[in-house]
Structure formats: C-alpha cells, structure tokens
Length: 448
Image (tube, rainbow, N blue to C red; front, side, top):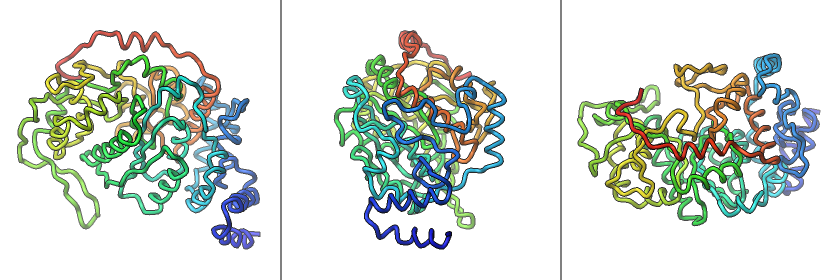
C-alpha cells in the first residue's frame, strides 16, 4: 500500500488541478481517514468541518475537546488538552502537500472556507487593511489569513528574508489565490533593528497605493490571532472617528536606546548578525521631536498613514532612528504625539495598559499568571490562558502570542470562538469603547 501511495504522489504533479485535488483527498483518506483541513495530516485536530462560513455551520469546529468548557475554566478539560499536546506533538507541515492543495485556487478557497462576499453592508462600506509579518509557519499564516480575510479588505504579507526559498514560494502561491493579498519584497529582518519597520512600511506603501478605499490599517504577526471579528473591528473603528489606536507614553528606555549609535555586527563563525551599541553619541532628533515609547502594534486611520508615508518629518525621523535600538517601539507614538509636525491625528497623551486595546499580551512580571510558557518575557499562550483571554482581555483586539507546536488546542479553540462570533454576531460592550474615547488625555513624566 505504501508503495502505491508513493507512486500516487509522484504522479500528482503531472495531473490537472481537479485531479490533483482528488489524488490528495484519496491519499489523505487512505493514510489517516478524511481530513477536513485538506492537508492530509492531522485529522484529530482539524480546525473546521468543511467551510467555516457555510450557513448553519456547526457551533463546534474542535471535536476532540470542549472549547466552551475550556473558556469557562474547567480544569479537567484544560488538563486533558494539555496532556494530549504533550503525548501527541504536532508534526511539521508537509509543504509539498500544502503547495499541491493550492493548485486549484477555487477549490482551495471553498474547502478552506474563505468568504466570497462581505457579511454586511456596514463591512462593505468600511474596508480594512492589514500587514502580516511572516516567519516560518506557513500553515499558521494560512489560518490567520482565513480568520481576518474578507474580500473587501486589503492584505500585504512581508516575509523575513532569512526564511528558506520554499517558504517564500509557498507564501506567494497562497497569496496568488486572492486578488486582494500581496507579498512585498523580502527584507532580512534583524531583531531590535530598523529592518522590521522598513519592511512593514514597504507593505504599507503598497497597500496605500493599491487601494484607495480602506479606512483603517492594522499590523499583525503570524504568531497572533484576532479576538474580534471583522464586523466588530469595523464597528469599533467607526466609533474612533479617525483617531489612532496605539500605545504612547514617555519612558527613559527610549532615551537609552537612542543616546548612542548602534551598528550591525556579523559573527562569521556563528552566522549570527546582532545589533551592537557603539560609543558614538547621536545628535538630537530632527524637528525638535520628543521621543515617545509605544508598542509596535497599532491600528491607524488612513489619514495618519498618508501623513506617515508623505511627511518630511516622518522621512527624517526614519533616517534618524535607523541606527538606534528597537526603533519600531518609538516610531508610531513619536509621529502621533508631537504637535509641531502637524499630524492629522495629533494626541499628546499617556495611553497604555487598559487604555491600550490593540493587543492582549501577558508580560513576565506584570502580575498576571501565564499558564503557557515565557519566551523573551512574553507569555506564549496555552490552553489554560483562554479563560483570561475571554474575561480580563475581553475588550482587546488581538491576542499575542501562539506557537504552532505548543498546546495547539489553544489556537484551535480561539479559532472556533472567532468562527462562531462571525456566524452569530453579538453586541460588544460599546460603553467601554465610548468611555475609553471620552477619557481626558493625561500625561505622566515616565512609565511606572
């Protein structure tokens, strides 16, 4: 049997798209039983039974565990999911089969459940734009794209240039199945360097030029997942009335990172390039700008995006920040918080913690209990963290972060919740967002 399967796979690349899909379907069925994901690997953790957004779709897309009980904090169900993840590690994606599944884009979009029409006139009239920072996990990228995808929106993916060529090819093949998904030229992205910001700005420029309709822009990483549906995001940003959603506060850390020049140093023996501080002092920022601290994750109005892409002050600040550490953590807030450069969304205010809703993040040492694991002081969310996501982080827009092979039921259950809220719209606590927008700006000299 195995010999026949190998011959079957070898011949698949020579067949027309429809036959390729049939070969994959039969191959997956023979190996593991029918796999609704279409990738022929993980029938036990299939994220959806057929199309996500079919009318009358089932309320459960995760069948092995009860996600409602997990979100309610049922420790028995949480323990079952954690034990299963430890006993049955998630296998790597079979990239060859993934690419073959993209040979017929119409079949792929249908099988994976991508919507072909906006779900409401309100969403049609208020399109959004997204950039996605992609590293390595192609299948996690596809599931994220499916969650945030709407045909009226615009998307741009920037892939770390260090990723192997097959990953770049897979992302481009995926994007080619959608008229509103682009892949920008790759940058080699170095942690804490300016390359991550310049890569994103390249994507943002592509989005701005390609589509004049979108109203708000969000950046998202492949390790994240939305806590709000597209409809909910549209309703929230319609309330914002052109204001930005970004973190902003004054911090001595920003001055420390920009007092001296940083350079990239490549270690030939290890092949690793890192950012190293020199003893060369930097001149003051251009345009008498006061540097503000922020998260790199934002939601921005189109008017502010236009300002960022066309303002001389924005250009000069980017040049000045290019030899500092973590420039993406001061870029957005600095442009938004200095009146003299005439940002259309100028707002000099301290905004963080519960006032900053773009991200749900558990930082090590912030007093919250991470039941997953810490990586670089950020909690990689596990199954036991889902009750906290639904309660404490309820108003937040996007959850950070997940690892594909770490307690994958956490990602699966959040996906199920997102599907159900898309199919069965609910009303959010709009009073929270109205109160947030009506709070008086306040400023403190430094972060606590």
